[in-house]
Image 1 (cartoon, rainbow, N blue to C red):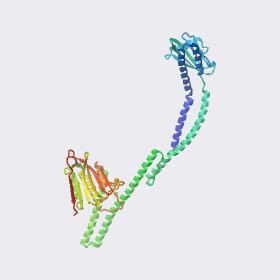
Image 2 (tube, rainbow, N blue to C red):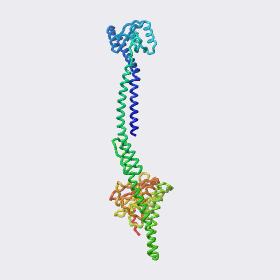
Image 3 (cartoon, rainbow, N blue to C red):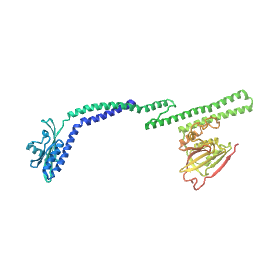
Image 4 (spheres, rainbow, N blue to C red):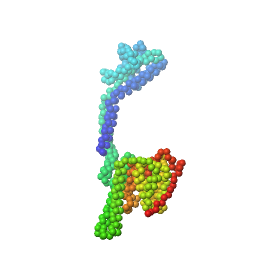
Length: 482
């Protein structure tokens, strides 16, 4: 990369030198002649103003002086072809001096027939061996017609161009050498951070998560380094979650298998002839099999929702009925459920899938219920959707990790404790269902004050908005443990 930057800078330097060559050498002749032509035309304009004066003697002196200052000579003729004024202070270079009358008349005719009332001639003088520029113009001043002829030598630029070429060659060599050195330093300085980022990115792609992208003074490279450092940290988190996932799934599968094997051997060797003990051992085996079945089913469910290989069947139903049905599934727990859902609130959704979302929320809340042993289920309106929340007054979640609760097997407490009533995939399933059905889900939590988990449902049109004409009915139900 450094070579390319160096090469591009040198190409740019070469283009600039070529441009200077064209300006200084190739175009110097045409530029010089154009400049002399413009100078002559400006002098003719001054001469026209000079002729408008009445003092002829002073006009003659001014005429000669202004021409001599620009290395020019000139003559003025009246309409009869009579010379009335001449300035020939440049010596033999003056082409006008000694013009024959027929030549003067020819020049006058050229001025008269020109659409712009002027003409110019470029020729070489054989006597002086130099170029000549001749300009003529017919001008009307105070109702009198005058013919103004100006002549100036065009300097031969061959010697000047030769000197410029030699000088330009030395300048070009110095500039090119300096540019080579400077561009080499700049290319190394510019490419070094990019090469470093490329090497570290290659290490990152090969799985080395210890790489660190150093920031430089270049804003674009600095922004890229920050982005890649952020990506590296996210990769580290993902790798940590992956290891936790493998460890936890392995633990959840290995533990019940070990229990099943152990109790099966106990039945075979110890309790086979003891009905009471055999029944107890068989119950343990059944419980472990149920846990394995729950784990496998949840993993299959999560995979199905994440791959979106299912049909969404939206129906209209009363939300309070679904809430009540979900609460009934936790009747074995001694928990107070406070329901703040109007009896007539109807929503449109896939009842089975959103029922699983509510069930998983409640199941999660039962694990972290606070000292008041209360879970609050509430529905509120926001625009055209119903927001359902499940809240507890438990320990809460730190803000730094609250976004990770949707990850598989993510635990706030890293000391893993196996829970036979849960697979650890409940909130991941909630996120997958909501993403697949177009519902929104989020969590709000404060440490020491509890957490509230939310999801949204479509509201049935033309029903009484919550909190306006009809207040939400509040009911408190205590489900006693059997």
